Length: 179
Ligand SMILES: [Fe+2]
Ligand SMILES: [Fe+2]
Image (cartoon, rainbow, N blue to C red; front, side, top):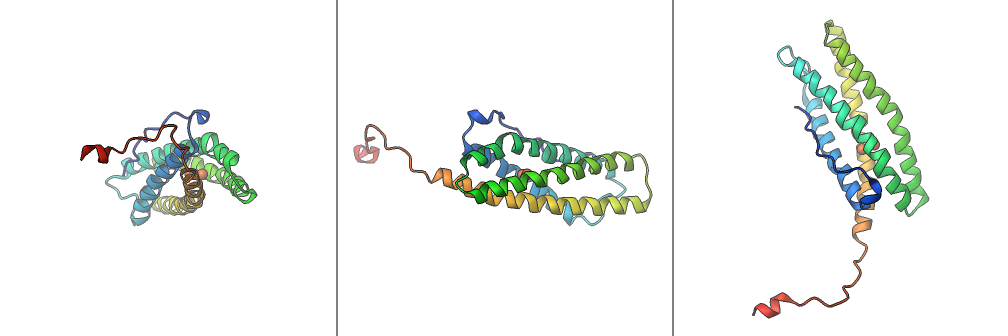
């Protein structure tokens, strides 16, 4: 259950179409959702055999898929949404999503620190508390990502549905000429 390093595309928002950044955010959410579902299904998250690798994987997830993902959204996705949004309601949702980042980032950093501390030795009680905190965090993170997906998908398809400009010269119908 090791978080894969996503090959992030260049972040220069001005050089990328809104459709592309929304698509990237949606695909990163898919990974967040899969990873979270795997962790949520695990009843004994820190079993004795593999707890070191699980701690490393969780720390990596928090860094890459929460801290860096949020940074990408704040730098590239949200500004695009604010610019492209057709309604005040959409802009309001974006502002709410941005507000949700603050407590989630603080929680991710807190969990990261706890994972460092607990790996140096802890009692059963501390493991249980940490496991509960991780489950709670992932549930909130998934709810946040779902809310984002709803708005990213709506914007993504809004952009895609814009009819392309007609070509200056009507292209030849290849099927006709092949007969
Ligand atoms: Fe977000
Ligand atoms: Fe997100």
